[in-house]
Image 1 (cartoon, each protein chain N blue to C red):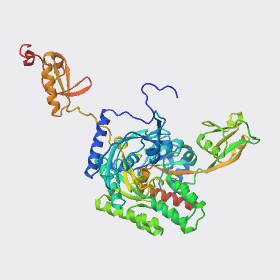
Image 2 (image 1 turned 90 degrees about the horizontal axis):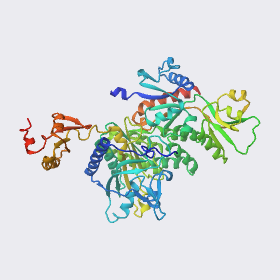
Image 3 (image 1 turned 135 degrees about the vertical axis):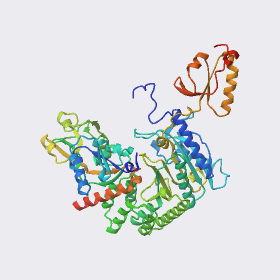
Image 4 (image 1 turned 120 degrees about the vertical axis):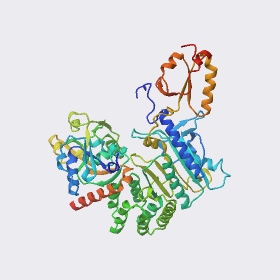
Length: 407
Length: 214
């Protein structure tokens, strides 16, 4: 690559100008407040972690991690999500704290990207982890909180799709017992969202007619509670049955929360099999091509940090939500006040400015001549490209301030 | 944007050869799509009577439109999907625009010291030869791929073969088929959930039509 031009920055990173920052802070504040209302306390973890601990434990694939070396030659990673760092904290600093633990976060995470397709190398996530509770109530709580958070962030039209890794694991184990390679192949098709490949692979396996139909049928397992009933008929495998019953229970809890209108069950929706251990979900907003939230149960992560515990959680893709709700037009235009003063009025002007600031008004002070001040006009005006209102008359020397002798 | 406007299904359609076959398939599935658009130069075709809007795209760009969600669904050849590797749902094999991706060379091809392969599909070609355990230099060309072996730019090419007519006329032979190609129906990750009913019902109608043909 040629030497970068001075305006360029690495691919996938962004600058946020005042309008966008105001909106981002707005979303961050409202979402964290919502999470606090559900008893989740915010924590902050470092941007850098060791590759061998958090890096290896994270759900991000190795080639997507940003790696760097410290001065001792140890490999570090820029955090790729907040879940693994929180697992580390829960197992160390919070080792003595009783379960369940409810933690929230808002922070930037990093992914090394291969190509330019709307993917970002650094973006903000706002989310929660609920550690130490394996119940369906806990899973439903994070889903309901994800819905509440999306609403708090200002997203109106959205859907949450819930699946369960146990269902497919069980179903495949039952229908393709011992055929590990075939199972892997089918799962990889589903993971890559390749339904054509999935059907082709099924045909290639030369299964009995009913089994083939059954496995093809799962591509349609998408909808409301009735999907659970259908799925229960589909597989007699213990893991699959247990998973579906767990999902039914989550649905019942969500019904009690009164949020089912936003939720659909989708048994083909699967996250990373090696990471998620139970319920998984994704959030989609109308008018945005990429998911805005994702989460699920990861009961094996904490044991990698020496404190085995069930855990569930989600992350909002805050940067994407910002894209959806748009930047704020002007941050302080309506309340920004200009105070003009001359040499003699300086002390009085700066004191008045301070008073107004304490009342929450944004104040800018500028030394100028009274003639210039008058040219600005009255009420609202634009000065050097910024919108102001005149809060106070010109503050000048005693004579000028009274305005008597000049006339 | 009105509510009704939001529920329109945006379909990225490949311009040219595949479009005619795709619109025919849509008509066979009972969707009243006028055939007068087969040679249109319009970029966006509104079809309010079927609740759709066609976005006329260069075939290789179809997966990009769908991945970003500016189109909800799209129709595209498997060759493009293999090459572009986009994060979209591949819902249905439409069984149209059938051909195959193949390795092609001169009739008297012999192994060479510096194997060079010319292609419009550099990712597909690289992956194929890597899996065979062969290290080859892949040269990306944008058209008239068949020229490459004739003028000595490459000793083989990877390209689509439909009837083999062009190959025969130029003294080339199909050395090995890589995989069969047909057009596919693809969907955006979000649209597939947010507009599931519309997409699923279209998918079902097409699937029935295709099954009836076989």
